[in-house]
Length: 565
Image 1: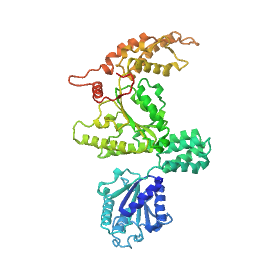
Image 2: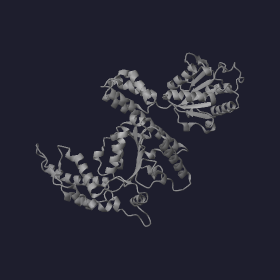
Image 3: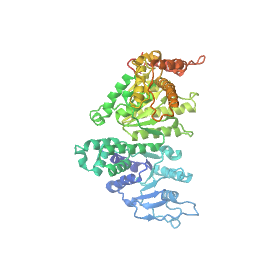
């Protein structure tokens, strides 16, 4: 299997033979230099050498030979008002004008590849440069140049930054992240080949390879050098590498890298959903074997339903169970105020997620990103349709193991809700009496009963279903937690009174405060009128809860709970 660098070298060679302008979006110029040097040195049929390449880096504002051994004198012509790249392009387009004695630039007759770096920086691109590039491309298409004459632009700027007037003349190439074998070779180069042969280190070496998948080659090498310098090859090194990967992913500013210690054991109810995700986790834990035996990589799930019923918790627990990073896409950050900015943000977010694979991509409240505007067919609605189209295409065509957990608290477009986009679409309803009791018990156990110095005594509660009788199908998980919070707050006042009475005692030890079923029942009665399930819409208007119920009646999504009605 060819490495990502070898595949890119083939693509670039073809582009040099057939395209006037090539754009490479990349921020590691040394990697691109190496690939281009390999093409020049090894592809003898092209008849290129180091003298065939002219390099100009706007970061250094200098022209150099490709082997960087010679600085080429480039004089700014005050009379013509040009210098730098415009000077090179004018000389390329019209070698005989202006005269050579004005421009101290060697003849371009022998130059075939013009390598420009940082060209599409917004502070650098000018109408003059764009016009010259356009002129060059037109003359190239009219076959006025040697077929090897190619302008290669390398820049970290997104493809969307390419000005429209020259976009159609440009071929865009992308340096893909290294494949598994390339990362394995990097680990061997730094830790030694024996790390995969030694039974003590093999596990960590394989985990390191899996952790670094999705990063560019430069980042892979940098992370490996850092981790091995600090702690060698062990569990600590793998953990440190994961933290470094998270730091790299955070650069995008749109994707949030989250830490997750949630587990399925802490999720109350939603048994069917949790059991299905347990199966998916087995595939994600053995991606190598899954690829080997052509087992489809799970795509992800869409979880729709009642707000505050554990959808977000599922996303966190999934990443923890899969043993991968959790990335959260904040849809509010996607929307930009300039034309094309929202689509560019979406592409950046999805490419960032792919760079972090394997991972779980949590898209919270996805309906807000693709809900559409109030003016069907208007600009806002067209924007949503374009973004949705790009997202659905990406979901369909992506090959990298990015598991999507999309959650929605409202009605979605039909394109999203049909099966096939996701592995499954689940519906989360309000908890049943038994599920509410399970949620309440889990929250009490996690927060209080595991604390040896706990102030509160729940021993008088023998059966939590005695508390949740009046919660049946009405209280969301977040509202159940709210009931617990209010009960504890009210009982905490008893402690404060006792503390005030005994404020002069140095050895004061508070009495355990007993919490009873009746304490919960009184709070439940107080809250019942304000819970989401009991909210009423205005005349001829349906509440969000009513809309969700109607949506489920129409689409019959798979219940996330085994005990759902």
